Amino acid sequence: MNSTNKMLILPIWIKKNRTKILAFLFWLGLIAGYQVYAYSQNLTAVEVMQQLLGLMTNSLWGPAIYIILYAIRPLVIFPSTILTLAGGFLFGPVLGVLYTIIASNTSATIAYLVGYYFGQGIFKESSSDNIVQRYAERMRKNSFETVMIMRFLFLPYDLVNYLAGFLRIRWLPFITATALGSIPGTIAFILAGASIEQFDGGVPKLNPATLAASILIFIGSLVLSRLYKKREGITK
Image 1: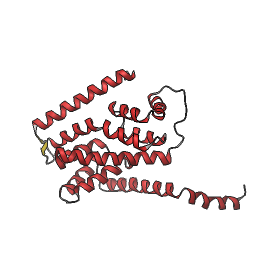
Image 2: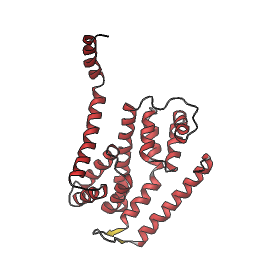
Image 3: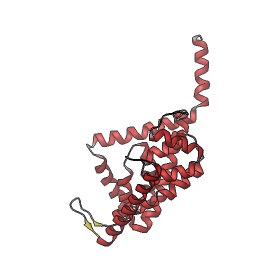
């Protein structure tokens, strides 16, 4: 193929894939912006989170900021646990659960879409018996039940989201199973955050009753996870 033909094909390829290109550039921009800010200010991920907590606490836009930050979290590889605890601390147990369910499912959808548009063909039919490949095969055949089980097993949250996108399973079964399967863990971590009555950078002041409820639900989630691991034949 001569250089003239290559030059003609390039604009066609760009036009055909402009949505993916724009999404990829947006993703790179988010990651670069976060990394540049954290590096220039010499901040860890936790310290960045402390600054954001102050912004959300002192603003009427706090819930919207929280949901947006949670939604874009997988694009900058920010720990979901920290944001979930922050939701309980900022908004209390009831609103914290509500906002976090909205935010986490938006976050899961964004990760799913990234996988959907950028990961096609990563997981192909294979005889490999590793756990990811095993669930990839099952997710193709029974997406709702498989995603639900993966949530109960506490498999890495973002990995499941990207995997669902890679496999291009239907979004509605994926997000429904995600919403239902993540409820126990979400409530446990929100209550843990809500148990913090005061935090000034030192030892936090905790509400014993709320913390106890969080621990009980978390233990129940672990028991459920263990039962599913036995049923699935997972030994590690």
